[in-house]
Length: 311
Image 1: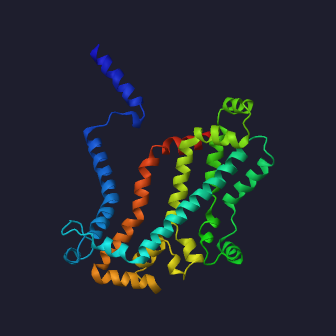
Image 2: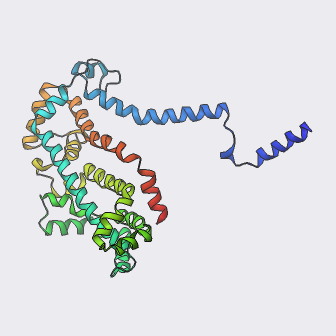
Image 3: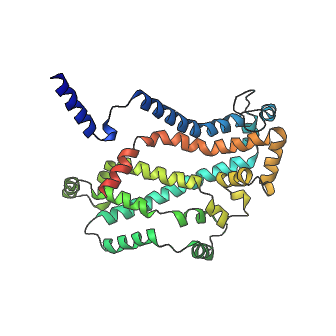
């Protein structure tokens, strides 16, 4: 009897897929080491950057570069960097571009997605096909540059926002979510006398908070990390550079800033270690994203995955 039960269990075990098998002690150990190694690879460089930004010149000299073990921590790099005008101004420019650009992109995307989600709206199928075509066929870099500069966008802030203001992918995700709104809710709102604006504001948007929060984060992170448009349309206006382009010039290329930016970093570099200043700029670029991510992270699974599946 016991042999028959054992044989049956072996047959069941052999018929199960690999991912349903009970993990062994060796398997769990390998998983733990693998995940630990991945976490170390991700957090290790970030740890070195943060600790180096708080280190003194002596600690950096003893470490021969990036500091791993904290010793003699100080805020001199941050004080010198923020006291000098260029970095503080670059942070303000980045925040302004991110806030204005995200608000404009969300306004356009929400209105476009809602219009395309209504089955009887005028020309929605034609507009949808035109938008989808632009996902696969674009005008190219040089035509885009010629159009923006031809419209007077060189050295203008709007050139950093308008060319990348709308993402067709984000519009399609929003449209899929809006299209899945319960028709009973919309019909009830119409019976109460609500128009399209009222339905969008009072019915559709409140039921789509998750996907709206996620798309807002996508746009905000895109604007905050953007520096390529600055390179194209604002390469010589150092007074208007956002923080990411300052980071690109000062840390990645290792060049000095022209004009007042150069003077600002030069004064700061005489008071603190240049490497700690570079790492402090890197940390400053990460802070807003690190602060914003926990507030939106809970919506990721519901907003992105659900919106994509419904599409």
